[in-house]
Amino acid sequence: MPKLKTKSGAKKRFKVTASGKVKAGVAGKRHRLMSHDAKYIRQNRGTKVLDAADAKTVKSYMPYA
Image (cartoon, rainbow, N blue to C red):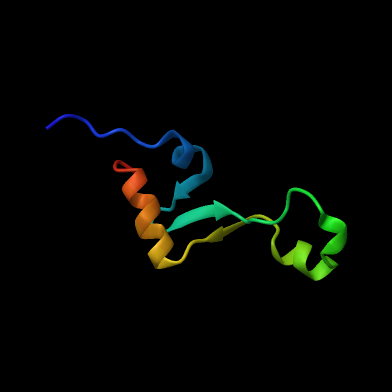
């Protein structure tokens, strides 16, 4: 079998943890932050673990992760 290619957009945006979960940056933090309250900005700091349904899709983009 030939080697499978990783989608380059996925390798830049997602990391797989040691337990196999997928981490991603939080959406809604780039611009127009004045319209969000401080709680929203604080809670969306850092990264989040994706849901199982989304993680399944992302893992198909990264066959060797």
